[in-house]
Length: 253
Image (cartoon, rainbow, N blue to C red; front, side, top):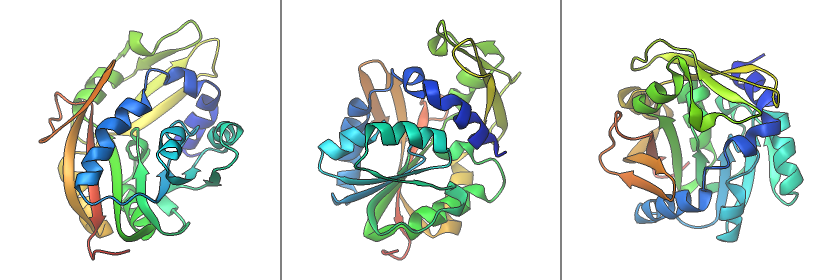
């Protein structure tokens, strides 16, 4: 079984609890103005790697029409139970079907960091581009080297530990462009591994070029309780994620 599929099939039952510190309203209050400044039109959103649909409600409340897709049927089952009105599809980001024309196609919360093989990132971005409406925007993020260092080095991390589970990084050290594993275990969840790849900004740019996307902005994201901020330029050591905003290289999909 694909490592990401195996991880999220096991993770689905506790995912919302595990990520309950993520405030999507704060996140989008920071992100959406950056998109507006770069030509975003409100309309239809394709959420790639939508998981349990935690991003849906803030976007629905802002007047967006939302379609979600994810590799994991278990994660989509959690999403469907909460958002019966949202169209959901099982799909692998590396082989993304064309679901329509969307003004915004995004993959957030390090979805694309789960793509491990050479060429996977380019294929995913090409699929996202194929779903763009004319003048649409693609947005995705990738974990920074600093985030990998704090998350995947060999120790149990208190910020992601409860009575029901704990997260333990399994790497001795983190190098740019490497692939790393963490383990979730405990009485509330089946023990399983998460495997992610750190993509350098140069690797991301190469994948975007191959997928026919033009970079509009790369921003550093820093997550703190009560404050999510975006910075230009990004810093791999100081920021948690790098957020990329792009358009089709031809100006249309």
